Image (tube, rainbow, N blue to C red):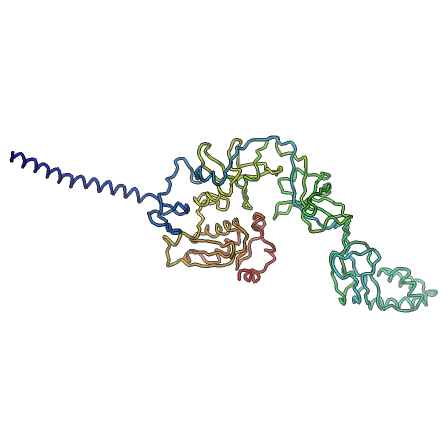
Length: 526
């Protein structure tokens, strides 16, 4: 029994040693394998999904522990992304299937402005040179009537001509041709027969001569002041007859074939929200504005009651417009995002999964609250029709193509820290950039971050300043200014590109941008 006990003990010790040698080795291998798999996994933050780090740790923004990032979904292309069902519900994302519709009669809206009727405008000029002794027009907007005294002028030329008249009058029997020539000379200076006869009869020379209004109307511009010296034919006043005014509307290039002379236009204005005025198209400009790609369309409006004021904004509606095709793809305006140069929508690429992708489209005519799609979508495509800004934000956070980021490069938030940066060549700068809203923020930051060498770009909406971290070995500071200015925004050093500025959404455009000089711009940031 003792012998068997020794054998059992030896066997037990052998099994133990074998487990220690081979089992622990396998455990280490499995552990190493798991560790290797873990190290190949990316990590993100549940509160800040833009964080994408190769190692586990704390979120550089909020300090929370990172969680494993969701593995890539099989079948998605490089520019497609996925949203969770919960996120879609919270953002009230809605989609619709695009279909061809037959729209026989629709309405096109036009934006326009009231202008003076140039055919009724008059420039009041002086027919002789001299000095304005008295100007009877005090302000722009003053009404004048035909024959009203506008000014009195002292004219050395007229003084000498009156002396010639008196001399010629005494010789009119012997030299009738000279007498007639002197009188005609005074008539050319717009002196009337009665004025000439009065000078001849009285034998007295007038020092100051009156200037009378030749038309009735409203003074639209004063061109001289009392005491000014003027030349013969020099303008004194601009007088506008506002009994009729022009409504000038912008028509886009792709809408030109829809309009013709004589079409009826219904006009409304914010000044009279409950009134609608009727007019007919009287003129369509033969010249296209190459900057805005629009043509001017004009109507003439009756204004005897002073209803319309030059400069007033108006909206025109033209009814009975037909689409360019019998069957057309029609999408609601809520589905479209505009970047100035591009129009984009978000396409749902999988009917059973919330997979999305940005798609550029070419738009045709505006038909009420809808747009005709000429290119970019097909019959049966499913697009986002509500919550498009939320979808676009998700695309930006995931580094996919988006409205303001056509390259698909991830937009930096400014909180990512300086991970992986070469601090020897990086520098931080801050400078002013004009802008208004969150769309401006996205455009400005995208313009900067897309430059090779820029690491971080964060624009503050309230302070109108951008903070940039960039690699000085790759770019210079002026390169960042130029990139932002080329997107349409003024910086402290570079004025924004005018053509790009005009293509920005209305909410991004700020008043008098192009009239500002750089000195005034710099002061506005202080």
